[in-house]
Length: 370
Image (cartoon, rainbow, N blue to C red; front, side):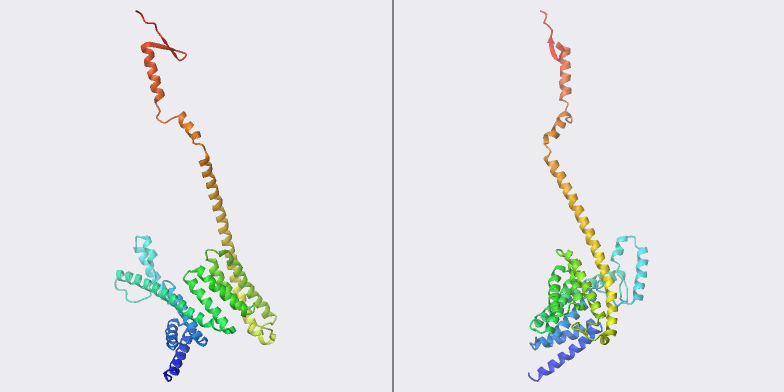
């Protein structure tokens, strides 16, 4: 057993290195396979030491990225060639001309596979592929969550700054899983925890903080209860970046976001970073403006709706409080299909002809002759 342990650890390390290389290249499917095998070996050895948390964390990240890739365009690869897309669009246009049902076109999605023998079989295969892709993506997101949660447990054991930052990154990824699966309220707590940890370790101009604030703002924007807090979080992200620029221009960075360094040592890198940040800020400020406008419009619409509902309620209450007699008097004046007056008048006319005349509305009887 003692001879197998070093061999197992060496194999796990080799698989981890291969998986990390594939991840950096964006080859997420290969990365998932290699890192999964590495974590399986670590699990068999019962080794969940903090030093091995990186393997589980990277495995979770690879699963997340692979799931996002699979979930793009109904599971179709985002790396499909533009030429193939154009060919499929031309075919779709021809089919649209032939089709008489305009709603049928909604189901037409470009397909990137060869050998189309029969249209009916292809439609069934396409539906099956989409369903399988959706199920696979859901399973990958779920697995990513489970693996990241293992990494969270491992990093929670560490007390050094590196473990804390790793833990914060795990919470960010857990929040990303919730965000991708549209569980926005569940993402909030993980993003909040990530920000809390990063603020306790990093300087207030660190770009990692800006990223955390931005992701938190996205979750807030679509949450059901805290949407109004999205704008302040976006502004915090922009403030972090602006402070970063200010410190870089003043030469107050040592390359790690802490302390002061010599301006001559960081000038070239600082200028490059300043350029990158200046490209980010306008887009973020535009998003702030758009979100502010949309929220203001939504609030205005909500206020108008409330006013309308209030007016309707008041009208309903006014109608309900109106006495029924007020309406019944109108009915009494002109009852529908009431012919009693005509009948009475006709009877009076008959009686008058037979035995008397009317004087002032009273009948005058004629004396009988013996």
